[in-house]
Amino acid sequence: MGTITGIVNFLAKVRSLSFIQIMQRTLVILFPFALFGAFAQVFAASFLSVGGFFGSIFDVDAWLPHYEALRVLFDDISQLTLGMLTVAGAFQAAKYTAKYYHKDDQMAGLTGAVGYCLIFFHHTTTETGIAVEMRYYDYHWLLVGVLIGYGVGQLFRWFGQSENATAADSALILNRAFLAMRPIAITLFWALALHTGFALLRYAKIDQYITTGVQDLANQKASLPITFGAALLTTVLGWFGFTGPLAYTSKISEIEIWDNLDTALSQGSSWHAPHPYTALSLYHSFGTFGGTGALLALLIGLILLSRNRNSRLVAQWSFFPAIFNASLPTMLGIPILLNPLFFLPFTLIPLVNMGLAAGAIALHWMPPVVYPVPAGTPGPLVAFIGTNGNVPALLFGIGLLVVDVCLYWPFIRLAENVNQHLREEAM
Image (spheres, rainbow, N blue to C red):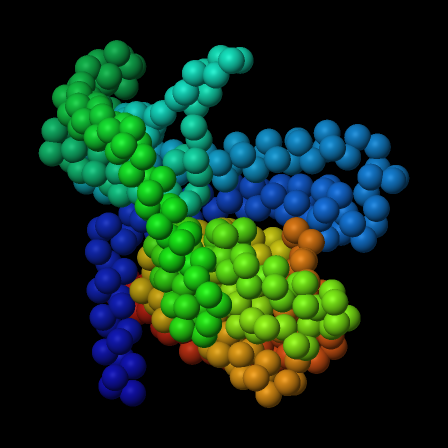
């Protein structure tokens, strides 16, 4: 009991740190946009695409007029929410940081967003005009945006004016802008310096070399150590908000995947696949129920067992996209991102699932997953479809989901105890 109390006290102190408070407020305020973006992403990929899960089952192209235009509209919603989430994160982090220190939060927020865009702004000239590269603005770089926003908020803390100073001249907006000139100028100076350094890295193609190196690291001969190592790196990076090596699905164990498929097609089943322990067969089929971190189990645990009304609401709203492995609403709404409470289950539960699945394959309880799976397939059905309808694979996946709920449950209770401790300290 004393050990649990000590853990609760330690985690409560971590949660009380200014950066952690600001980051969690930033993540939670972004939750609605992540939710709408995830819903749009699911509908575009699974329902409105001919190659999607429901689109292929119900022949969407045969009966739904202008389905392609509808898919484009949902893609646009996804791009304008998830695709710009990091810029919004930089804005909110700068705003909350400045407000935490009683400085001009509105000007800080705008400065944080502009500063982040300047750092990563990159455009190329094409035959049709100028194209701006947008990949550094989407949710995969959210942590970077939050850190930059936090830094901008600190500049307003040291060089900006207090809330009272700006409030006294609230009728004169121009005065408020002049009062913020110094931290804005410092932000733009450093943003321009970082922009120049980043441009030099891009000119030398360092970013491409890093990406290729990660892909090559994962694209080795399929084996348990390689697959588990890539999965652990993916879950750890996912907890930080970044994309891990197993996100490069087209490059991981590509030769082994084709060998497995060729054997299955020639023999009529996947039982004798020559490479049974690929990332497709273990990680993507059993380690990603609800996305990175197997978060579908966490949502089920929150809905059924949580005593916190807000957590249950977030779980209920996030449940639908999580079925299709869209985990971002859960990452922001709980939040999971950089939350030490959930580091262990988020990073290790997928590996537990993979270990149990590898054992089941080794014991011939179920065949390896080798067949292609439509985009937007619900997580618990990936193994069933990827084994060409093997019922034991389906039942095994459902059993793993139950195990995952049980593994997440102690951490759900711990999180509630920490929240209760913080509320008692605030009274």
